[in-house]
Length: 468
Image 1: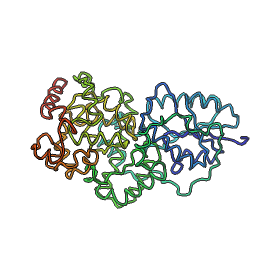
Image 2: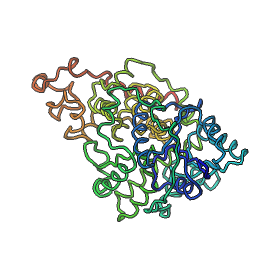
Image 3: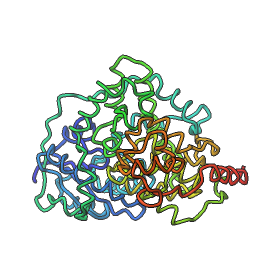
Image 4: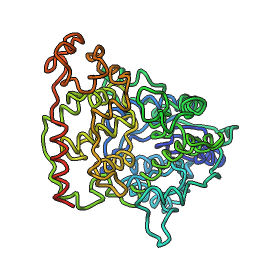
């Protein structure tokens, strides 16, 4: 390796197209692409589902890089410092991360590199706009989504359009760093194979999924996105999380369609992701602290039995149980169902949103610190622009409204496949003859409800009154 080399550090940008940082590195020198499974002391460890997706995504990326991706596990600062012993390395390029621990790590690494005359260039490869560029007129950050969206995104058209002709980059690698197994992402569990089996992972799959969605699913997005049995959601969240596709590509490709209520609503949902990152950047305590301090004195219940029943989908409320089964078996959960199961945990079971957030973190492919924590605080009522605490989703009425034919629920709860829809979401009210005909035995092959919806709602509202 006698020629000038730039290290390109892949993080949450596992793609080669629409990757300005990689493009710029390739213009300046030969590129030594690396991925580090960073053992940063301040970083929250990846969940099990994230590890499975990452493993498959890196394998896909490596093919795009002509098998030149170099893998490392350990402290990122120490690894990069060690790589700099190669005197031909003249720079390190990367796309920025926005998690508090990542910001601190990157500042430390950048300072060291500059002190040692190594060029550093960082780019925005994960967001449409930088969180520090958007402030209110008084120079304070927004706390409410709608004015944030109207000011920064509603009339936004001009985001960088990718070049279809990819810059020709010369990659370099070292055989000693070519083994992905050094990352120790998988544990040879059968679940790891099953949970990923219905997904196509990687940049090409992400682009294809976006194209298919914009041709079909988006046309009834505003209404259809609420119905989990319909194909009106993009399913792009894991691809976005790992940077297999950029939000700018999604934005521009959607903008290129004829504008209507469906495309506009889809763009606003993309901006909720932006808002979550915005909140995390300006309020870095988002993952650990209630953004509304009054919730610090909320009388949460510590009930491990109820928490476990929620996790494994044995609450006795079919829409809840179907959602939790979907989560564990697919690494994904429909957004409407996410809201229903989260509301049930924090408001009907009175269990702290931290515990639900941590379980989602472990099971979701799209486990994203910003989105996950902002979403849970929204449901709990403790966030900046949260749903009011007294908004409590009724799992019976929600199931009947958004899964009226029971297709979603019966898919994940086959034991209820013969239940008539009239009683599907409230089987405890079904006459004995109906239960017998459907081969449903409450307390045996399907559980009785673990709480009473009406009484638990009243208890939640009473608890909220204490902190108002």
